[in-house]
Amino acid sequence: MNFDDTPQEAAFRETARKWIEANAPRELHAELSKSSLGRIRLANHDIVDVGKAWQKKKFEGNWACLHWPREYGGRGATPIEKVIWQQEEGVYGKLTQPFQIGEGMCGPTVMAFGSEDAKRRYLPKLASGEEIWCQLFSEPSAGSDVAGLRTRAEKKGDNWVVNGQKIWTSGAHYSDYGLLIARTDPNVPKHKGLTMFFLDMKSPGVEVRPIKQANGMQEFNEVYFTDVVIPDSQRLGAVGDGWNVSLTTLMNERMSIGARLATGVPEMFELCSNLVLEDGLAIDDPAVRSKLASWAAKSNGLKYTSYRTISALSKGERPGPENSIGKLVSGMMLQDIATYAMDLQGAAGVLTGNDEETAQGQFQQMLLSSPSMRIAGGTDEILRNIIAERVLGLPGDIRVDKDVPYNKIPTKGR
Image 1 (tube, rainbow, N blue to C red):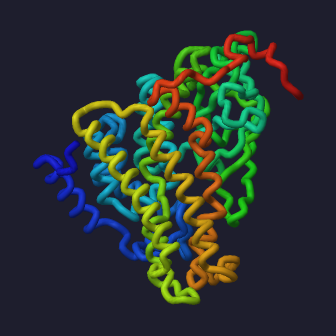
Image 2: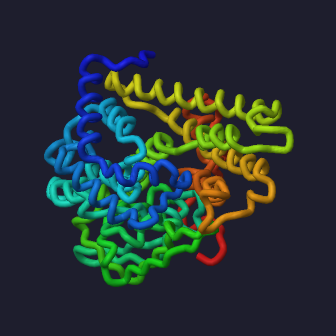
Image 3: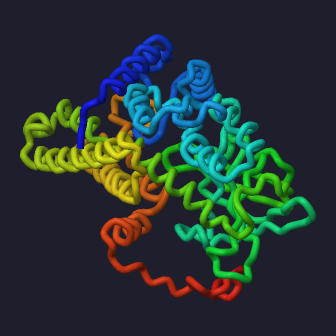
């Protein structure tokens, strides 16, 4: 494993750094640096508007979706150059939040399975920030079992008519297009009767209902489909092959989330260095120091695991399912650190609202948002199964419904 840049990578890093220094919205740097982990709030700006402006500027400078081919709006950069860009972009990368699903998940799926006309029409507008995409996978009755979904798509002429419901769809309320997986054949086993589509989120029959979260944000949504018409030209992959198409999306999703998920370790060290307990600074307390040491060790483990991925990318290799480790450990650490920070603060730990900065409110926000980090992109249980089966080579989990036709699986309320 080599942690050093090659001469070419060092030159690329310097070029990226100079462009960012000349073009980044520095007036937002302090606010972005202090924004609550996992949830970004700007006092005087809308994150979508600011994100679109930053994405457009990057696109014009040939820095948006830079690992994509040039003909689709990218730069044709190598995977390691993408990693270098993310490192140099730093806190300004938070402005790309509205585009992370499109760039990291939907775009690669369209690129892999869409027609050439679709790729040239939709991908450049995604890269430029003109259009935002969301991912319509999760359903109330399916939970982590994506293949257990009930949303139906029926073929009528050259179109498909969709009815059903999705839930926990991030960004659906401001998205222009969505990646949708639906059941097209209930007479075959559940993994074999799915088909992938993309659709205009402003289509007649699409209803988006934001979900009010415990932390006061409304980033997730319920999405209802009532006789929504989707042209067959907006199908991705073959009919009935939606599960294989979805694996491309899910693989990119877990890698994208794991690469950017914060753990709260630096913020925790800062809190303990300034928080005064009964016997002095928190960081001088042996029990606190033991906790910090444990988290520092885990954080370094995550860092060097990610370096292993970076080294593989630098050699042109494709990273495997071990990327699930980063998301699994990061999500748990985030929740543990937030809980411990609240305990250290005592009565002040319950404070939140307009005085969040003085009340160290970032940890309150972190605690309220951390459960979603252990669900989005695969629950802890799903990730443990992936690591056990595909990394450690352990026997597969028992799946009693694997070869049973979907409409023969016992369930309530189908």
